[in-house]
Image (tube, rainbow, N blue to C red; front, top):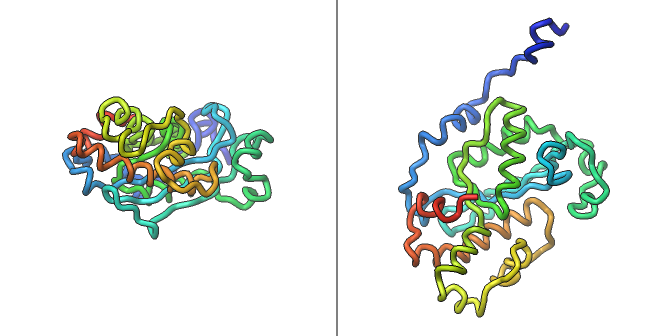
Length: 234
């Protein structure tokens, strides 16, 4: 039975898991002096019911691990989430996830805890990553009373920095992309596109973009995680 205290102050959350407790203190462990060639990363993406973080929700998360520029194809994450908001027709046309796909999916609490455990102490990489981190952070706050602690790097910001600061980058690829969407950048820089608006496939494309960019970044003095976050933080 709901008590008066619970009605006014909400139900008491259960104790955080070991993974979530570690995540709470992540910033105190982050070594920003780690060489980017040796640092741990997770490229990730989400699919959403819409782009309004106050009215929409996450319906899938995909991720893949990297060490420096080395992608680990066996270390991946992909989960569907039960929608917490309306599944809109226009959204279904984009991500192609329907009610029948999501009816048996787990809720945000279980999936986000698994995602945090998968990420560990890694730096996140995404394309327009502020959208993904905002949705994940808001959902984590609601589920656990804990915000997303992982630092995140945006491949779009890295691309813009290279375009402005390294002429050899453009020469190597025979020009630069004037478009900012993930598929256009992938096509321009030789990343195979196997469909878009699937969270795992987009995460894998993002990882490959980062792989293309990293040698040029280090050649321009972006050698540590701190350097990378300085130019690429969303």
